[in-house]
Image (cartoon, rainbow, N blue to C red; front, side, top):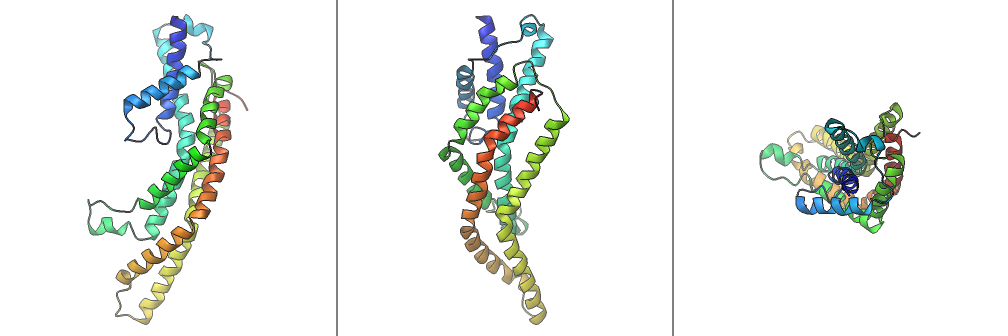
Length: 256
């Protein structure tokens, strides 16, 4: 009985650490008790096929604490892979908000609530909707259960292959963010060039102020039209996510 509880506890630790980075579950509005309960149920459903290493049962307190810390790290790494999706669309929204001129309100009225994060929130909400509509969350939970085949409790190691793969995932988040925000950024550059020409032609005009309305009007319409492009980029990223999740677990387990 004690061995079964210890197994559940270690699975719970990995699940809880992973959910700390998961979309929705990591939100500040999510009650901590609910997050703990979900991690507990996930650990309960993942117990089948999970076994403790023989040396862990006979290990001392320091060894047990080391295993717990190891499971926390593994959970955070798996959750980080999923969190990169929201980071990517949030970065794209930040780029779009900057090109729309929404960041300038913080310069005019520091400390006031600004709408600069509105594009990021919209894209992140769309991403979460796609995660549940495409059943990506079921695939990720299944991947968590399968992670114990490649990454058992007490096993695993760090390698250069793992570092290279995680670096590639981080680089891809920037590529996807640029692809989503590219149309708005391109139009913003064109507007800046036109305003520079207009400033030379009409020196008395305050082009800096006049460009606000033009930038926001054109940018909002363009952002609406490019949501379909953003949806394709996000869904393509999400369909690759379960495979990335499993690959990172396998690399943590020392696989190739």
